[in-house]
Image (cartoon, rainbow, N blue to C red; front, side):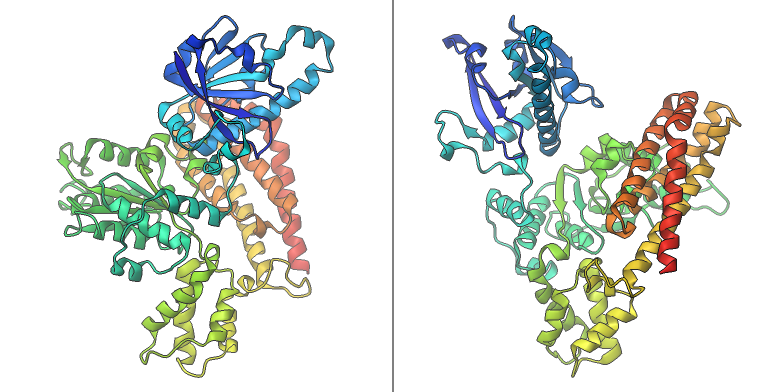
Amino acid sequence: MEIQSLKISGFHASDRFFQYRFNLESGTTLENIKKENAPAIFVVKKSEVSHLLLDNVIDRGHKHQGKRLADYMLQHEKIPLIRASYKLSGQFKRGCQSLLKNIEEANRQIHTDLSALKKINDRENIYFIGIDSLLFDTIWDSAGSLKSPSKATLFDQYQILCRPLERSEFYQELLKLISDMEVPEDLRKSYVGESREIKLIRRLILRASQNDDPVLITGETGTGKEVVARNIHNYSPRKNKHFAAINCSAIPTELLETELFGSKKGIYTDAIDRKGVWEYADKGSLFLDEIGDLSLRHQAKILRALDEGAIRKVGSNETIDVDVRIIAATNRDLFSMVRKEQFREDLYYRLRSFLIPTPALRHHPDDIARLARHFWKRYTKHDTALPEDIIKELRQYHWPGNARELKMILSQLVNLFGEEHLKVAHLRAVLMFDKQMFGLQTVETDEKEFGLHRIDCLRRLKRMDEVLRAIEITLSPVLTMQKNEREIKEEIEERLYRHFSELETLLLHPALFRKPRVYSQIRKLSDLLHNFRKQIKTSIKKAVQYWKEDIADQYIVTQGIIIQEIEDIVSR
């Protein structure tokens, strides 16, 4: 019998995956593999795990999501085998590399401890991991073969898994993998640019338009996520039906469900039967912008509507069948939110059936000039060309607001100074007027000037201090045990969700905390608070004990550091 496997050797980030086959019937045994010096992880399909349960293999069962691979795999007299639950290639890669580093450290300790060396034989260098077939096939298709040991056969195409690619390399690799297709001229005019990044997004738009699966569009604010969503709809079979859009963060929590699903007459005074955007978009597409800002309660309702293909109006028990194609967007890291239980895992994977990551403008600077000319034509009446020295200055800007900010700057430029006889000084005046100079300078601004970077830092630190104080106030009923556990959980969960969401949003920009140690301390406290929130769900008493032992002192230290940093900024 022949078993496919992927082999990972060594413990450095440059290591690669190889294809390997166990031919059990022809006598290929693990004894031959053990003779290699470097540690080796062999990855197989879960469906083939049972064939590897030999006398010299110990079955360690299924990996718990919260435990490290090393906890299951190290220090066994037999070759350990585990069934892992990884779904994403990047997550799987990091787990394997972490395990290899732990193996290296464990082997060092073993070889300095004679008693341990007697107990653990050379099988310590072999490890088996079973993964789902889909993930296995994805890696196998791009891995290199071990049939020839020459360097030329080491797999080069699947470096996305084995080492972080440069951004331009990443887009180039994806462009190679996606077959070429004719891009309509209207799409080129709608989503402007000729960089690899933009060409890839246009192809992904066309791909997404060919099916009805949900689409998740990620990217920073101002990268054109709604433009992408509208184009997916416009090139799909649903193009003649409604395209509805709703910003999940712009509507008060208590009104969002009504906006989404509608309401029934009589549910409140003067209420009438009303369609929500979900029903309005029937047979068409619904764009859920800023979906990362949804509460867990609303996430559950959206998941149910997706799964059932039906909705219930607020105040009604009747279901309405709705055929709608969902396109969601967010500027947040949903995967990190899933791990911190801020976003439902089932909804996350349901939405990202098709993922489109819109690139930040600073990552494709060659398109700045093209975009600037494109937007300039919209704002000028006489088709006046944008001066080249202004375009050159625009290319040096960091564009934290991306294409949306570029549009705004050009609009203000023509509104303030007209479209003729423009100079770089006019552009700089607009940037100064809108307090955007931080983008034109490096982070190392002149410490003699109370520049806008310092103002941004001051605002960020003050807001962080306010959020931490709000969290402390919200947790007061927990820490003082003023109410019973059920009342406490019901009362604080929604408020905690909002505070923790803002905490994570503030932490997205480490540079705005001025000093690495300030950011590091706040991040440390944030991780402790997330663990505390998890414990609240299981045991209030244990959570309070955890606060007293692990968080209370760190809270005081963190608040002190923030106040000190604020005072330092103000005094300069």
